[in-house]
Image (cartoon, rainbow, N blue to C red):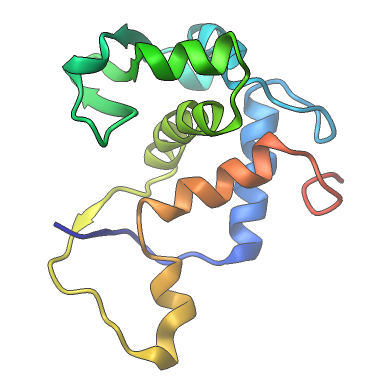
Length: 156
């Protein structure tokens, strides 16, 4: 099933990345360590309802390194043990990005970017930019990119 969300643009996504850094207590110029941020989330006013759990790799599907579940108590980020270990021990960039991606899903949900089921995406090439900015899984990736690595576009 395909998912999309309300449309946004690159300028707004950069603003969300800056806001994310402020809410998490990071300056616009320092790098964010997603593993360390996981432990800080419950202490941050905006993320007090977020928890995480490390699962045996077999508890999530093979193609799911981590996922965020919304429930009555808030949000639960589930992370495969191999992903967490790779991010923590080896500082593997891809594994760190998976963790950050799930954290940003919470942030996006709190901003009102909820997934909308859509079995038919509009493939009109004239609207490709609007289409790309509505694909729900990609939106957190763009915010992650602006959050994880400080750049002149996110600083100041």
